[in-house]
Image (cartoon, rainbow, N blue to C red):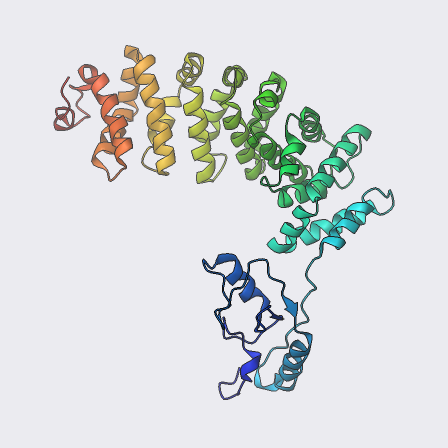
Length: 413
């Protein structure tokens, strides 16, 4: 834009000082650009009018200033030769009535596909649309649609329905919690989707199903989690195995989060161990089928949970590279990974420390890494765990040539 152009002052937003694209007037009578004032109302500690300091509630109505917008557009067109871009006509904000109308169309066998596509488009557009759709009951409508597909054995538009449910899910809405509380049928419907092999865009659809399943599990209804049978867990482990074939990274994250939540309830931890999960977790991390720090953190968190059981530790130690994998990851990924790795080593050192295991920890560099944790700029809780492990087996490791003697002599027997 030509710097010599004089932009009319009333075209500029009082907050951003930029030409307004979608001018709206607040209840205080001041006009702002919609994006700027909405961000102000969302983030400001004291929601007063920026220009007048008058009270301005967060849920204030914002009235579109159509006359000013047309003046700005006309001025932009007249000054196009000076490098002024035309301001496009903004979209009308989504209203609850529009969402309710789209939800009603879901019951029409002719219109439901187009309705779901439109809702998917709106949900992906912006956060304000998603909030409006959530308040209008879109989550309940999507759950009903998914259950209907499950009962009728149809898979048309499942991808859109799952994505809408994921995007508009709000756990703070009581109705949403009631949808999933003890709803084993919904879990079975999501499992049915995961087992379908003839779905269009199969990886995308199944990933969305796993994201929704994670949200269901996160509600943490013990009676529901306890009734998830071993076959359900085996299906989750199978997805981890499929990661070797480049399964969606988001799908793997969701599976790990589901299993971590399940560990907190009843006998699920033993069921997860019996499904061979420990071996698959070590394999996935050892061969780095993923490139995500978050997945590594989740793997170590889940391994720490499973190694709290004797059978879990036995499976971990049975893998020839388990100790080496944990040793390699320490001090390389994140605090969460270090915390999980040291917790695994602490459990093994305290409950499963045979002479062969201790020598293995020494041989693959595990003991060296534990000493490095004490020397490194790590959190105090990590250093405390490392010291406790060294104290437990001082007699076995003290004379090793690969360990600096002065480090070990700091800790008396």
